[in-house]
Amino acid sequence: MSGPNLPEALYGCAVMHWRVGTITGRERAWGRAVQYAVTLSSPQAEVVRALGYVDLVGELAPGDRVLLSTSALERGLGTGGLAFVVAAPDRLPADPPAAPGHIVKARYTPQQQLVLAIDEQESPHHEAFLSGPAADGDLGGIPVLAADLHSALAPILVGIRALHPDLRVAYLMTDGGALPAAFSMTIARLREVGWLTATITVGQAYGGDHEAVTLHSGLLAARHVLGADVAVVTQGPGNVGTGTAFGFTGVAAGEALNAAHVLGGRPIGALRISDADARERHYGISHHSRTAYGRIVLGAASLVLPRLGGEFGELVETQAQAIVQDASGRLDLIAEETDGLLEALSESPVGLSSMGRGVDRDEAYFVSHAAAGRAVARLASR
Image (cartoon, rainbow, N blue to C red):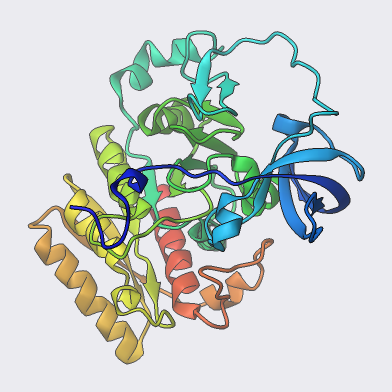
């Protein structure tokens, strides 16, 4: 049944907002992404922020005329809420040189990408997937840590490095949020300072150091091609939620633990915890974690329980125990102390922010993920 006052024809329709403008300035850049100031060709001559991916549209300059997509910007959305450069018609990049790779990502969209996946036939690593542990689908017990939001990645790495800075960490970016890895300032900076061994973009996500067709083959590549000691899995920047029990992209955290279980890894879930989120469903342990781990995970897995202390810490422990109880024996808890982690977070090479809040406003969120990272580092070093 359709909702009130909404024509049936609009359900499921994608509505694009197209704009033409001229670049008037280059505001900032990270990795292979550039943010421009663009003056729209309209009577109001409005100036908007527009993101251009160098690998898609080339290097642009003031005076270039550009075609933009602005749908999410027009709606004022947090996820995707920028203008994006589709093309600069008068400055099209040259055709790329001939290269191997036949896997298409962002498939059947106007900006679909042809990539060389680490697991495909043309890859120099393809043979690794045809024999031995990768062919058998055996991760050999490597810890696989899944988290809900992309903002969890940096504090998780803080926790890992607080205990064992030499561990090789592969990050697998799933396609629940941004598809281009280039959108993430966090990835660009963490790679720059050497905190990540590699980023693998899986599913429809693209632009990592390596591509993989599925999360499963990406995990096997992390272990058996890249030699990772730990794999961390989150969606890309941006999170979609509907306020319903299952209508959020973070359910993929549970699916990631299922993949790790099937492949003989050590599945571990980082709990999304907040003492600052005003929404009841996200206070304490978010319903995202309660659903993704308590309802989606089908095999044996562990959840990291940070010892936060006080009444709030007691609430979190009660909620965590309820998740374990509801999972009927599939889940257990790994308790991790949080001493020293707040100080360690202050040394992060990237700015820490989630849902618009920094460490000063939502300490529990960041400390909890750092605790998950430290717990995983402890397991990986055994």
